[in-house]
Image (cartoon, rainbow, N blue to C red; front, side):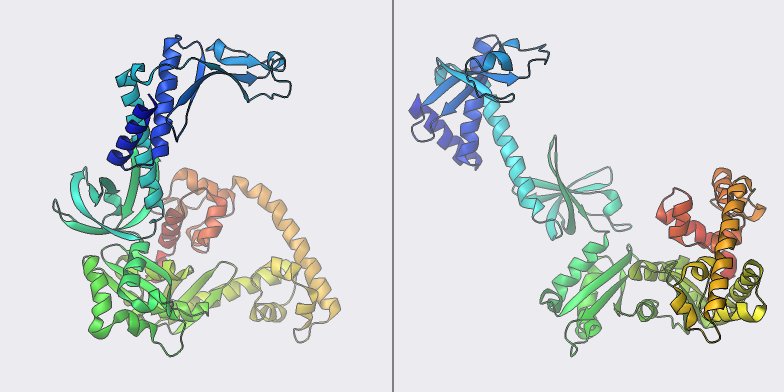
Length: 494
């Protein structure tokens, strides 16, 4: 019997290409299953095979459980703790007590049972091995052959009987493939499903773009150039931000390549997707200016609190700055991480003049000061009452003409005004939204009422919000919030 066991292990291991230990475990499981069936499943069994000789021993075992645990099935598989300590005094719940029993012959365990268990174990081992192998390759671009199309999804054969899927949503627009065609895609996720390993790939993610540049531009692989961020309008246009770690190197020129060969190779792989190479800059404002190319930004206003920037361009460049269907401004926003608002110089001047007047009026009314003092606060960068109330006194004392008495009085009045606003705000929960807010495209009555309850009553109130601020008020998708705000700001660009 021992020689027969060793022979089966060797043959199955060589045939399936899996570790012999997997086969030993499968035979032990098959022998244990057959032994339990010979006792009508009334006992639990463990089989141990000697890996060197092929000899095996069989044990009946009981799992030790707490005294108060109810047993419904397989009563003969368990032993209460109070009874187990009579056999092994130091035994603990969760451990096992075993005693040797007669082993059944290997040839008598039933060929079908043994075969089923062994095949199942081998399949599980093969699948786990695939998952382990490809988990290490997440983040790489792999090439496979188109095996079939499944409701728009592309099934790729990666070789060695391994399949991967590119979901329809992860394909480039209007992209189609023929059977047997070789396709490159980015490995996004590897998981273990009941049907086996699932390898999910993508051609539409920005990581695919980044990895293609790593392949085409050796300087990136040598860490001479870093790709800082990327943004894609899949199949149409993309922006990539790069920086050089060697000041003597031109990162944009290296990525473009001789006669545009490198960037053209990436474009060809992505079916003609136009790619802008942007110089990254540690200064956020300069980075945004670079990201807006080919449009030229004439002036810029940064709001650190809202993480937004207002960009001014010449009148004739406004449409180019926004791009077709907002493409350029959208890609620049994604690339830089800042929320960007683009407008003409005259519109920006008017907007900020209006904002300054609004702030001056706020400070005059809330702090009970004259227009001259309110204008000083605005010029010094104060944008709300919270800043006046809680900024350190030392910073306000640096303003020309401000002494301790004035600073203390201003801060006290600001705190009182904030308290009054909070009380009024609680009563504003019943406020009704304005008609322009209710009629805004994409707005629902429920959402409009919810916004009005938080003080966002008009379309202009909504336009003034940043995405983060809107998400703090209502629960919605960030992309949907951005679109809603842009629709509210539409009159700014008309």
